[in-house]
Image (cartoon, rainbow, N blue to C red; front, side):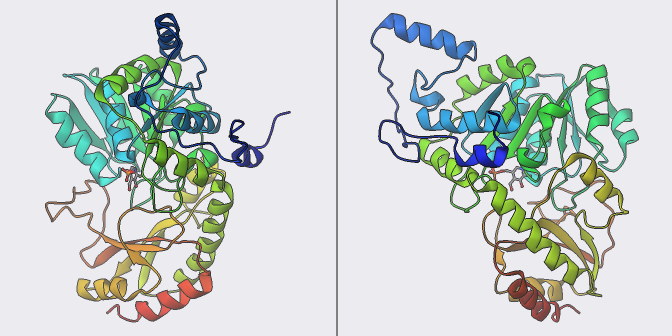
Length: 396
Ligand SMILES: Cc1ncc(COP(=O)(O)O)c(C=O)c1O
């Protein structure tokens, strides 16, 4: 019987030995075999991506990480899942696995800041060139392709400014030119968008966010198709990337409620946005909520749901008053990351005027406009609105 994904997420793993409803946390470096022949046969199975329930050495994972790989394989409809200790590791793994000196990578300008740093500063050290394209202009991407382009790296929607791109167009073009494609799908998660089914070669999610959902675990998932499997496996094995059994357990636990949590984040967000859109001090809300907007149409075209992460554009000649607004919020924590149960806020710097941030090349905003990113958590939205209402008064 084919189960719905909602049912599947509740029943992915059982521990038959211990008769518990959850899998055990298997911490192991040495894995024991009955003979050398058995060990060699097992390594052959791993190399051929055959189904296994344990690895040959703890560096590659344990029974707990295999449980997680199997759940994500189903969710992503993937050939294989590579788990990493942080999301960031998954992005680096993808780039370093497929790009070699002399190659170029085309990167959407709105990628997560540190992804920009890897794809620009780190790869430069290996004679790989990153070229950034305007996520709102497909012609710009097309024009920047060259014979050296190895990979197109897309994040959808983009970090902080949440532009949505026409994903099928990118995949079609890349396939015609024999270029590999990567999508950072952390916002949508494979529950709402399956990049590999759309034709991407690599689908990445930071498991730190909604997969884990409780702000207490870190991890990355790189789902791949058969075409890139060997290349990524080669780099994965030799670079020592891995997720610990404890983090894998927490992420399995988070995934059981991914569907219900995402639905609630979305419901709460709609209520909060309904309040925010009436506020004069807010010039724009960067979220797919206006049915006639390009952002909404592209979201609807590809996604089956949305979540709690978006930005507001605040108009103010006094940046200090925007900082006061952020600081005075009581129910929104100030801190990195998102996707946990709680509401969060951050004033983003996209102008690149500090040494910690990379400048956006294509996002246009005036000097008196400030981008504040909000994550709407699972609190009562009435309380969140009261908090926002009180704090918005500080904006001058
Ligand atoms: C869109 C996106 N991709 C990747 C990452 C990196 O994930 P991690 O924090 O797990 O390293 C983040 C983290 O904020 C992110 O927002």
